[in-house]
Figure 1 (cartoon, one colour):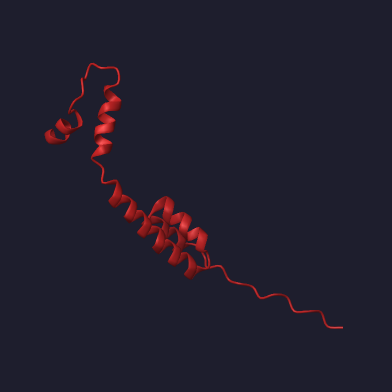
Figure 2: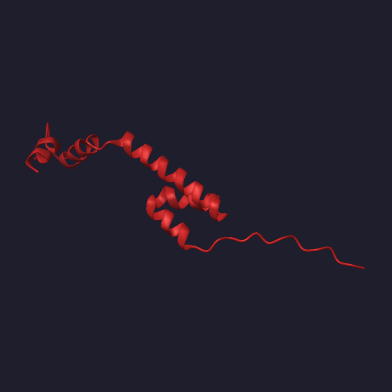
Length: 92
């Protein structure tokens, strides 16, 4: 924990008015953003696949984008959309 605090406080004057923003920027620089982006794209791809299978493609994409793997569970818990056939023409 001391190492994390030292990295977050690197180059920050604690008495400066913008110390919070400097610490915040240091912490955000430590986040592996590229890996998180690829994981999110994988979650969305699986959500799209599950949504297509359940007849709700865009709903699957949206749930996976917002909630990740938890969105898969939300999508699977919802009922499957059944396609209704078109009405038959009236007989005369």
